[in-house]
Image 1: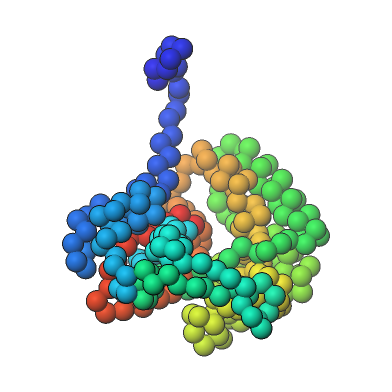
Image 2: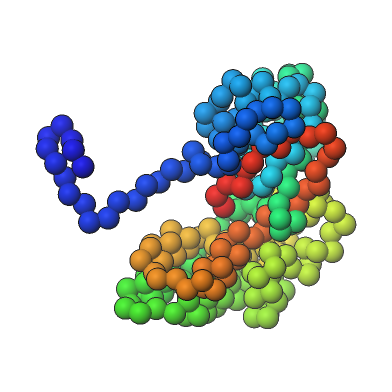
Length: 269
């Protein structure tokens, strides 16, 4: 690489494009898909004009990039939040500007509401996560590695976190929750809206923790060490498919309304 002070030689180069490639670049004609990046990161005026006030928007994807699109079409158009009168502490009410879409629906192939990260982690739980991170670092320092060992470390961590926080769980149910993105307790909620509300209250500590809370605590607590350990891992096809499937869950569920615009927002987890 040529710089102002001379040439630099690197053994490896990583091109981190981030949200810049979130969604395909397509023409912004009526009802045609609009790339999420053009609405959120690039703030393309052509793309923004393609989503007029009062329209119905369907977002394909329900991860972080999808939330960026929602914010761009709401707060980005003058909408504001204020404390709701008479609601529980911290409850907010959205005040529209009148320039937003009349409806925004996020959809995911997994059809499961995205679970937020816990608002806080108890110190005793953090001790378990720190021990898990040390195990992952040791596993990552090995020569040839097996993903089965990695899953064993993560599952043992989840079992300990569940037991410490009095979350009803077994090794089998925790494994099922990881694989499907949804525990039996969570699936009893009548609708995706209620599931999302239940998850938010549990992560705020206003309802008993669930197995989703357990995996959110484990996944967010050890993720940097996990990725560092996997940075030079040579995947087989099935191993990568299994990891990506678990990494992407849970996600959001939504239905596409009729006559909708469609930003492509299958963003990062």
